[in-house]
Image (cartoon, rainbow, N blue to C red; front, side, top):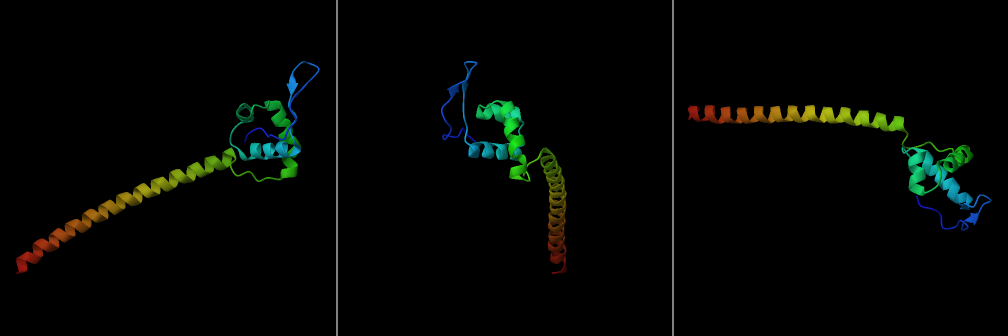
Length: 120
């Protein structure tokens, strides 16, 4: 998510720092982005070039309004990773069983070929 182009250019505050003004839509979209991420707010703040304090404020302001069921909470990510590991282990076991069965089939084919020749 990048800075919204619709904000007013910065104005100098009483402390001599330039302040950016962001549109309500940009704040709302940013809050939604924060809620959907696994990243920390400091990481997102660095990514967007906006202070973490401002992002915390926007998140608190728009959280109820958005009523977002986040798609990727850290707990959900951990659970999906656990399930993935389980499926990978199951896959490995099935691949091993498949290999064993293929070897058994080859042995049976050879035995059939050998014993089939003796009868003739």
